Each structure stands twice: as C-alpha cells, then as structure tokens.
Image 1 (cartoon, rainbow, N blue to C red):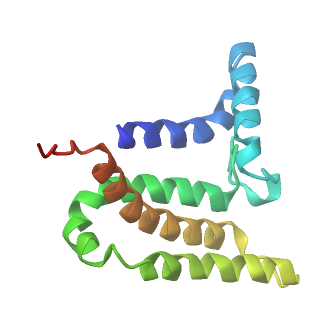
Image 2 (cartoon, helix red, strand yellow):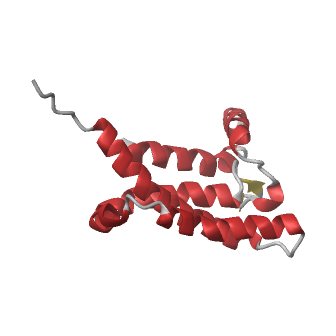
Length: 149
C-alpha cells in the first residue's frame, strides 16, 4: 500500500506539467494538481525541473525528497537487516539532513545558487533515510497485536 501511494504521489507531480500541454481536460487537471501541491512547496519555477517547458508542481528539493522516499520504499527490503540494527538511533536521520541544511543555509546567506541537481540530491538522500525510519514504524503500528488474557 505504501509503495502504491508513493508511486501515485510522485506520478501526480511529475505528470502535472505534461497535463498542462493536453486538451482542456488535461489543462484543468494540471492546474488542480499544481494548486494541490501549493501548500507543500513554494513552487518557484526557477527551482523546479521543467517538463515540456513547464515547471513540475514541486521544486527540485521536494521532488528529491519524494523520489528518495519512493526509492527508499523499494530499497527497504534489501536494507532491512541493516536498518533494524541501527534504526533506534536518530543519528542517521540527522546525518542525512545535514547536507540539505547546509544547502538551505547557503541559500539564505546569498551565496551562489547550488542548482537543481544538488538540491534534488540532498532531498533524495533524506528521502531514502527517512523511509528507513517510517516503514518500520508503520509495520509496528499495523502489525496485529497479541492480546494477553
């Protein structure tokens, strides 16, 4: 379920600029998707990947986080044993967030722009590692609990 939901989520913001080049129905749906992602992302066109000349519904950093999360979902079965050994420590989540934090701090100080690829890469790293914490939590939450009588 998680993989299907994440795939649909990534598909929605990736397909959005493609829909803008379709007929009236496609354009309408494209605008609805763009507005739907607006509360989650600043959607600055200069910080977004372009598809057919139109910016995606999320910036490159957000796209990286979402695609990284999707990749993390599919990689989790391969990484499960490693994740379960180190999962209880938040250090890996903090380490994964550090490059993005530096990228954001550099942008705030007015240093040269890091570019779409670096922003998306820092998002991908954080997205993958975040899923290594979320998936075990969801498994624990959804697993049937034994009842002691």
